[in-house]
Amino acid sequence: MTSDISKYTPLKRIVSYFLDEYDKNIGDFDKAWGFAFRGFIVMGYSASWEILSVRLPVNGNLTVTIPSDCIMWSKIGVMNNNGEISSIKINNQLSTFRDNNPNRLSDLTPDVNNSWVGGLCNFPYFVNYYGGAGYYTTPIFGLGNGLIQYSECRVDEKNGVIVLPPIYPFPDLMLEYISCPEKNDDYQVESCLQEALIAFIAWKFKLNSEQNFYARFAEGRRSLPNKRVTLQQLNQAMRENHGFKVKN
Image 1 (cartoon, rainbow, N blue to C red):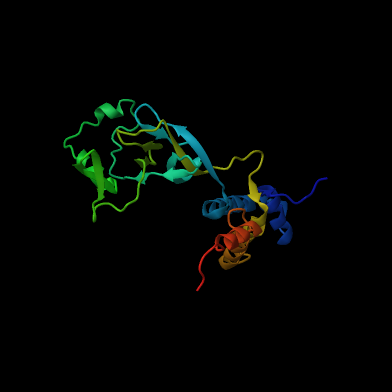
Image 2 (cartoon, rainbow, N blue to C red):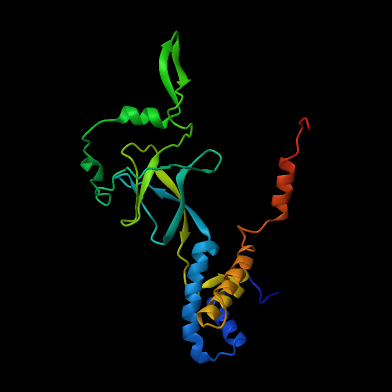
């Protein structure tokens, strides 16, 4: 059994829907397709393009190559024992000096050594005295914020790499990012956004308003898989608020 309704609708079909609705002819197709492609990009960046999660190997010079189809990254981290991505600190003080060179590490010759200060400030607890049979930890109040992150990095967008510090303890890195959609004969648009795309084309043809496009876009994005509220989410929220507790 087949259906004309599916999760995705080809971009060319949506252009045809516009031509039919506004009584345009095939001579307007190329112009309308150009407008549709621009609207596809606007909506993709804002909401509709899905995020990919990949595990990337660390290069020998302690950088990670960003995938060529990456448009925008959303999370960088390492995998924990629960299958979750623990984000690492973004440190824009890390140098991008020769980060595309295989000999990058040997070129990072320090002028000063402040490693003990960094270690103290980046870890919320500090072994600060010895008593009897072992070392004891005491919180150093006013120093650090209690957030434990397993390493740090800097993203060099221009050279397409993630720069890691000279001491990085893991063999790989987790990256979540928005991937550039593939054409695959034609671009595929989430069907819940087709009315928004028609409204975008009409706006650019000066047949409707910008406000109408954003209203249709707001309606459509509420139906996207990562935006809509499901019965499972409601049930989970209700159960999380129940428990053996003393009520007021």
